[in-house]
Amino acid sequence: MAAFEPGPAAMAPIVSGDAPGENWDRMMAAAQVGDANAYRTLLAQLAPWLRRYYARRLPPAMTEDAVQDVLLAIHEKRHTYDPARPFGPWLAAIARYKWIDRLRSLKAEAAEPLDETIGVPDHGDTVIAGSTFRQLLAGLKAPQAEAIRLVKLEGYSVEEASRATGQSVSLIKVNIHRGIKHLTNMIKAAGDAD
Amino acid sequence: MRTDSLVDRLSQDLRPVRRRNIVREALLLLVLGVVEVAAFLGMGFMRPDMPMAMDAPSFWWKLASLGLIAVLGAGVAILSADPVRSPRRGLRWMLICIVMIIASGWLIDASGNGLGDLVRRLDWVHGLQCVWKMIALSIPPAIALGVLIRRGAPTDRGGTALAAGLASAAWGAFVFVFACPSDDPLYIAVWYTVGCSIVTILGRAILMRLSRW
Image 1 (cartoon, chains in turn cyan, blue):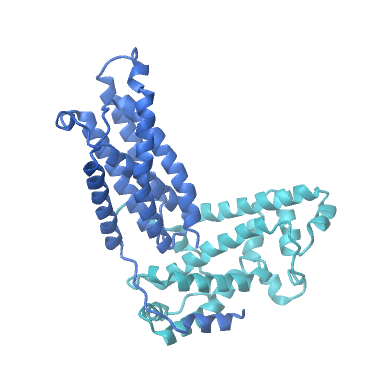
Image 2 (image 1 turned 90 degrees about the vertical axis):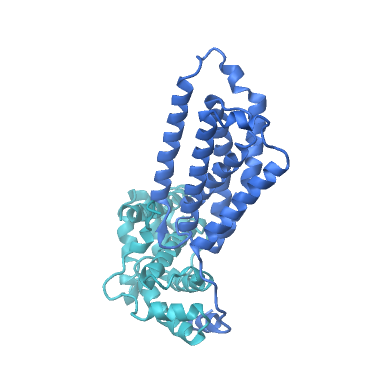
């Protein structure tokens, strides 16, 4: 039907050096007919690609969960892959969908205490990690970006963020909630514009 | 769980899967549509003046319009239950169709009488019955589309659920056309819009939750 277009997810950015493997199409097609070895090889190769994908898009503590979430989604939805089409856009679409899903989950966790491993300041990977996420924050209102940065990236409690910014505890939670909603809309809008 | 362990667990006992087939899914919906129309008419709901009604342009207007929306909506819904396809362009086409349908309804109406008998024409008692029946008739397609979408992997769940809600609403109204005693475009524009809106809003809300993956 002419009324359809490739989804925004099909054009999710695959940054330099992250290009999907050449044989992934073939391995996924083999997995669909029950080739467990091809499937294991494929998933093992996908995991590092997904780690790099999420390292730029999510707070570090969420990366591995997101990777596993995508591997499970690929497993559950592997019948939706069409071997006549390239595997890369299909993978990128699922990774992007789960990225937005993870960002939404941050809203639900807005008031929960955070894992102390979040945002270790001088860990090398952390400097790179979340770079795309931080760029996205720049598109938010300053109080929203500040609340998300402190609580979600740097590991402050909601109370500590409140004292640091002068915003009330309730306002911190509201700004996290609204900011993340805005973030997911920005990602979707960017995809639609593509 | 470590990612390596997850990879091992997922690849152990891997079973072959049956790939999605859009044509098969479309045929399944077509069969469901035929069965629903046949069952509805078989239960004696066909309007008694059907031969006369078929001479009225408004009868063919509502039948063709609703059929078009149902086909377009179902197509958008099942095609966009694919991670790499967006329902947005399809939804825009549906919106254009709906606006053109309403506009053409007013044109048909403009050739009729004035506004004096507005309340009589709206006939709210029968109108509410129409709404109820349309909603009931939209349940089978909504369930079928829900199953197909859930089996798929839509990445714009809101858009896909909206397309499915619109398709179910138009589908229920399409089937109801065979029983609806009114050919008054005003009556149809008002009550069909009410019925279709309820199904679309509820359908989108429910199917969006069901299609989460």
